[in-house]
View 1 (cartoon, one colour):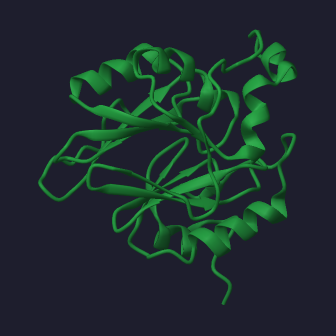
View 2: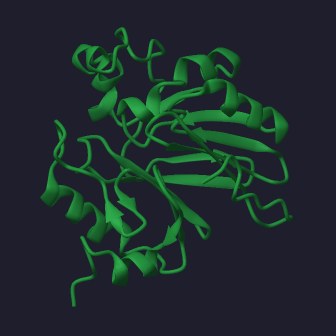
Length: 223
C-alpha cells in the first residue's frame, strides 16, 4: 500500500491511514475518529519521519501507540515517534521481551534494546482502548509470536498484525512461533467475526473476513 490508500473522512467512517515502511514493507496504521481526530498509532515499525509527517498532515491527536506483536519490523520507530508524542505504549506481556532482545538486534545490525521506552499498558484478551468515538478491542491471537494480538473495531475493521494476511497467514518458523496455535487463533478469534469486516494486515493489501474464510489456502472454515 502507498502512504495513505484508505482514508474515510465522512461523519460516520473512521480515518484509516496506512504508511508502509522499512525493508520489510510493514504497514503502520493511523486509526482516528473523524469528529475529534483522536487517534492510535499501530505498529510504528520504521521511518519515523514519514509516520510523523502523516500524523501532522492529517491533523491527528495520538492517544496510544499499540503493537500487535514485538517483531523488529513492527517496533523500530517507537522511540522516535514517542519522542514527539509521549503517549502510552501498549503490547501483550508475552512479547515485551522482544523490545530488548540482544540476539535479534545483533542479527539486524542494531544495538539493544531495540525499544528504550517501557510499555505502559500490558494488553490482555478483551481489553478495550477508547479514543474519540472509537474503541479497539484486544483479541489474543498467538501463533506468529507468543504475544500476538489483533485489534477489533466494530463495525468497521480488524487490524490483524502478522496473524492473517490476504490469502496467507503469519510465518511460524521463527522463535516463539507455533503453527497449530496460529491456525486456532484464526479459526476461533478471526473467522468467528462478522463476515464484512475489513482486515488490515501488518504486510500487504487489505482483505475481508469472508474472503479469507473461503479463499485463504492455509486455513479455511471447517465445514
